[in-house]
Image (tube, rainbow, N blue to C red; front, side, top):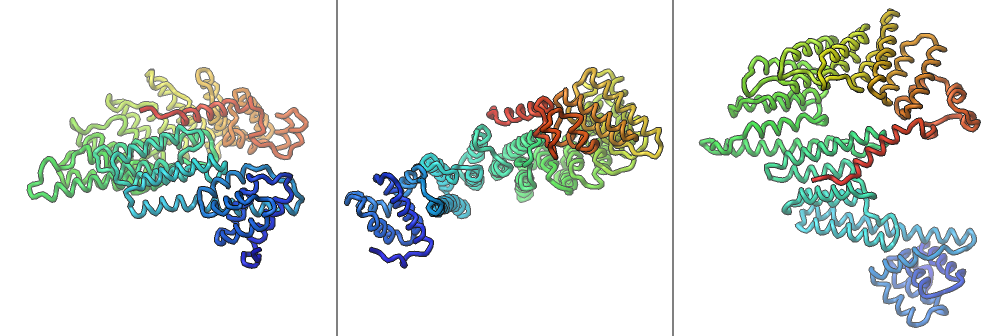
Length: 593
């Protein structure tokens, strides 16, 4: 019999625990004996022959010669180990005393460490193949997924279950591969993930597909990369609308740079080819369309503060180096880049470009509604003191131009300007703007819920030492809410903004709390109590004790120290839950091609 001191201390403990398990079982069939061998083999993988000999020696009275021989044969077989692992996992837990249970946990922990290590090695092999530009990397990545799935089905362990990280590694293999139709195949993997019930993509998944298209040399690659980026943005917007705590789909700078870098590279390649020929072959000259595509990539929100500057640089190069005349799309893309950049002078840059369009108007360049909306959006994000006033001046210009007639987005941006304004009469000015919108009698310009919500937001943040302005803001908020309900159902944002109005504009405490409770009860009837706006506004305005007394009849609820949103009656939150479910179904629906 083998001496124990040849094995590490932890392995001796594991082997002893397995022998205890064996002796305490009511039966000792071959299935359990082979499982027992597996535990010992894993616990002392570096001394496998010694473990085999030791176990066979300890259990020789229970094993037939044929079984002893089978154990020794299986000891060098990886497939045999995995099959035996399945048998070990599927055995029922033995009923031992506390000390024996402790020994069992040690054995199981050893096995789980082995499983985690095996998964890591499989993924690491694919990562190495990617780094080394292995031509068979996609095949190896697919084999990794298939093998993990097989082991998961065989073992039943979550450690083997293919997750989003494994699939992202497959997408990365596609992105870095030079194989034919790689981007399309990567997108197919992404679509399979989207339609899957168990594996949902994250921002990294979309980024890998974007990178796959961006690395492609096809002329349509920039447009396809941009399409996937917008698909990610839509998914991210749904995630925000669902109020999910963990934002897994928010586009990162890496995501947007994958598009920007490759489209710019395509443009630079075209410029270099054109300049490399002495006679500047006409067919190689970059087109306005190519410049527009490159400029458009700088208009994403993640392009950063330099997005507008880089976009305008390309516009200037069009004229200076290649004698190309920019069109309306060119200017609109540059202004959109500035409005999304967050730069302190973005609004001024947009206005400068708009004036340039007006001065150089021709068949190719003429400001339209999109042009003015870019300027209005930049003003709504700026810190200019006169932003709201300047926005209304632009509105008057738009009303005189058939091709630039204002739309719903125009009015939303101007209302946002007033909401952010420090003017004490901004509530009245915002209400007058909404009335002007109604007076236009244009079917597409009827005020919608976004306009009313922006108006209520302007009322809520009216700050003035003059009680008259505060009183006017409260009257505008109440009258606008009443008018809105005649044709439009309020949502959580509406009720949240109205509660802010009450909290900020009603001076008497008791009256403020009574109005807050009344509005909140109306919100409950509508089923619009959300977690991030309405519920928080209620807690800011009403003490916890009064909330329990006024709103909850159950004694159990009244005695709770804190009441969370998830504890509220389902009828109060039904619209929020319904909206989340709808968004989730849309997200899970297969992508139509």
